[in-house]
Each structure stands twice: as C-alpha cells, then as structure tokens.
Length: 194
Image 1 (cartoon, rainbow, N blue to C red):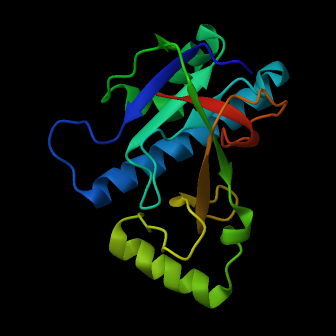
Image 2 (cartoon, helix red, strand yellow):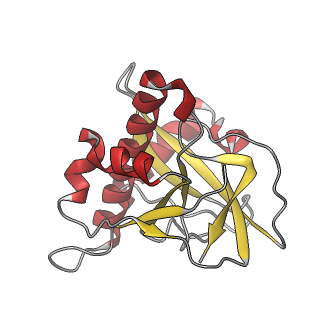
C-alpha cells in the first residue's frame, strides 16, 4: 500500500481540557473502533484487506501521545471508514477531515509486540490493577522494549487485554512488501511520519 490520504483523530482536542486518563480512555476506544471497522471492512470486501493503516505520530516510550492517524491510498476507503458506526461516533466530536499527504521524508513502522503481550497470570493481574489506576495508560519502563500499551476488550470473551505497540523509526523508505493486520499495524510495511 502506498498511502495518499490520511485523517487524524486527536484525543487531546475536545470541548474542554482532558486529563491523561481521559485521553488514554478515548484513545483505547478509538483504537478499538478502528480495529472493529477494519475487521468488518475486510469481512465484507476482501480486496480492501490491506487498505487501512494506522500510526501514532506523537508516540514515545511513555505513551501514545493522544493522536491516531489513519492512512489509505484510496479516498473512498477512508470515506467509508469515517461513516462506519464504530468510527462515526468519534467523527461527530472531533475534526476528522480527509486530507492529502504532504511530501514525506520520514517513515516508521508500528507493530504489535507479542513478546511483551505474553504476561504471566500474576503479572496480568498487576497490570489490570495498574491499568485502572492510570486510566488505561501504562508507560513503558526504561528497561523494557520501547513501546506503549492500549487496553482493549475482547469481543469474544469480554476480558480486557493489553496490546503493546512498538514504533520503529526508519532512516529511509524501504518499500518492503507487507500487509497491515486487522489492527492496522505492520512489522514490515512503513507509514509516513509528519
């Protein structure tokens, strides 16, 4: 996929100032909606399976930054995405306008860190407790692999799980073949950073 269009969802914007817990909760809900919209789109239209990618342009080791950017090479795909019921509820409250990509010089990959997702039951319990305290924001420790965590709720069993996302900045565009998964993430395929 060669993205040409994007739309931003800024969890930090809204009717009033939001604290870190509110921003983290809103980001997890927007990410969940994005995932559900991608899964439904892939189920209905097999050709659009890899047409949506996401990025967290403000992400760092301490968190997601409150900005979710969605990419596609087709403006119509983003239009359908914005009208999806799981996304439309946020579009009503945020300025979500489809825009053309500017000239890009920097790229990054965002992928799921499955190694960090595999926690022991006791560690999972501690993480859930910490998750409640922090309002879904668990910053990475210095000795951990860089990344951030988004809390999601399983659609099959209703349990909360933590999805650790890693950002890897690339020195140049590799143009590697790859597909974006149902979360809009890819270990090999890059997205523009601006």
